[in-house]
Length: 415
Ligand code: SF4
Image (cartoon, rainbow, N blue to C red):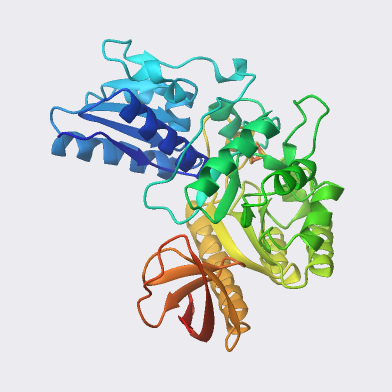
C-alpha cells in the first residue's frame, strides 16, 4: 500500500481534524499508514470503529494502523488490547506532526483536561467536499449526564478571531463558497479569549473582514447560549444560512433537568418563535435522544410534540446509549426494546416533518450548493436531486427550479 489514508467517524469537528491529519501525513511523507479517527458519542460508534479496524488489518496486513479520536482519548486500553492496532494517539497528539514519526511509544494519550488552547492549523481544502469546515471552538465546560464528549475533548477553548479570518481567506482563495463553523459547543465561543468576544461578535467581525466569504453555516447551537449580535445577524445577514441546528436532546422538562441541560422546553419554543419572527424562512434541525433513563410515555410524548411545536425539520435521533462513567448510566434504564420503539416513532415524525417542509418548496426557485453532478443542498439545507446531471462543479452555487419532491429530497431543474 503506497498511500496513507484517514478514516473518519463522528462529527464535523472530526472531519476538519481528519483533513489536518491528512495534511500532516503528506507533510511528513508518511506512507503505509491508516489513521482511524474515532467517535465516542454512542457504543454503536465505537463498535463500528473496532469492526472497521479488524477489516483494515485483514485487508492491509503490513500497514501501520493508528487509532485516535474521542474513543481512543477516553478509553485507550480497549484499542491497546487489539493486536490489529499499531499505535494509539490522543486527541491532542493527533494534531501534532511529530506524533507520526516512527519508533514512538505505542500509546501516547495525554490528559485532555490539561489543554488550554486549540491547535492552530491552516487547511487549504477538504478532499471531495463541496463545503469547508472551520474549527472555531473545541471542548465543553458543561457536564450533561449522558455525555462523554468533555472527557474526549477537554474543557471549552476558542480559536482566536485572527486565525479564523486567515483560515477562511485561505479556503475562499481555494474556491470554497460555503464554510461551516464547527466545534463542540460553539455558543460558548470566546469566554476564554481576551475581551470575551461572543459567537455573534466573532461572526460579525469575520463578515466585515472577509467580504469574499459568501455563505456561512453554523453547527449545533445551545438554545439558551445565544447572544444579541447573533440574533441580529440571523435577522439581517443574508450570508448567514437560514438553517439553525439545535442541541435540544429532549422536549420534557423533567428529563431535561435529569440530563443537566440548561434549557426547558419553553425556552426552545421561545427560541424558535424568535428566530421565525426575525427570519420567517429559517429551517430548524435538532438532536433528540430517545429513551433517556426514567423517561415515561408521558415524558416521551412531550419530546414527540415539540417537533411540531417548534416546526423542526431535520432530526438527528439518537437511541439512548449508556456511556461508561456517566451519571445517566447509573439511573434506572428504559428497556432496550422501548428505546428502539421510541427512536422509530421520532424518526417517523421527523420524516413527516421533512416531507412537509420540502413540499412547501415545490414550484419555487432557489440557490443550491452543488455537491455532485446529481445532488446539492439549498440555503435551508434541503437535499436536492437534479433531474438532469449538472456540469456545474461541486462547491459552486446555482439557481434551481424545484419541480417536485420525494419523501427524502426535492427534484430540481437547472434552468
Ligand atoms: S453541551 Fe452537553 S451534550 Fe454537548 S458536548 Fe457538552 S456535555 Fe456533551
